[in-house]
Image: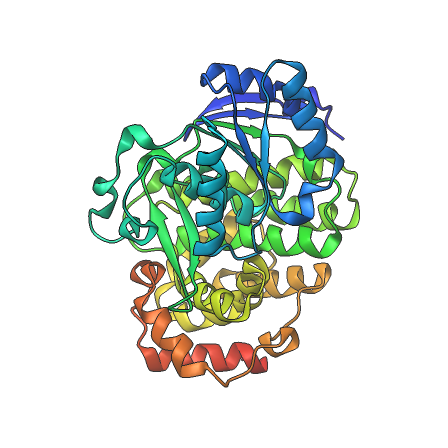
Length: 391
């Protein structure tokens, strides 16, 4: 196993990242670097009571940086959660956000930071056209992001997914300044994740790398990052699930997660176009949705994937060639880490099939799918994923 020090690094792409086991000890330094004197730590209810949160807040307090806590966040954060967080931030005169947790906490923290100094409603900053230019840039609070899962990569994203409860859909809130100024990526914070969450978030990281790689368009930087991210996941995800204390596996998966979110500036695809409405309607885990949908989406896109799948199979040194080798690899990987084969097994049926397919067509991720899918095609794809029709 690699030593802890060999997997340390200070990176400046796509933002400042302090990577390595034990780097959480630098939280007060990060606050001082960004001139944050009274941060609000935003996390989810499940993490709020764990020692890692109280230790971080105590460490900050001992360094002369009193830190507030907000944790009223659902697994798929909604507009009410964000409004409550903004109110807490303003009432307590905070001057920065520490977004600490998995994708829900990171997204909520970034959205709260965006809205801290705005006078427009949240949905005015939906990622449509140039809506982001409506924001008062000076009113956006500085953000430190601390991921505790290796999956979403939200720590290096400029957007947040928020559920619009009235419309029952997820919307993307975007501003370039939502990219956290400092990321503390400490793999030790992921050690306590149960195997099923390690598996689902790891497959989420794979979905980001894979969809970015398959998205059409010329972006060799994103393609290169995505290929290496997928190689790291192939080498380390099963180990991270089966050996939870293996810090090398945890480190490599955290790197792969960050890589996936860096690569998907190129685009995503039908996995996310479907996972977004499914998550909003069924409140299901985003990574698990992507994990189940993955092979069905690949099969639907197969006519456009001959060349990228040939290169991917070669790079991953898979048995066999091209599309079939990649598909077999993904199906085998899922079976090794306990990902179910069909959406029905997690309580999703065909009752709202047409509604979800209609939302998928309109989802921003659909625009960069390798093939332009119709609502009918999304409905067929989703029906196959619900019922486990893989071939």
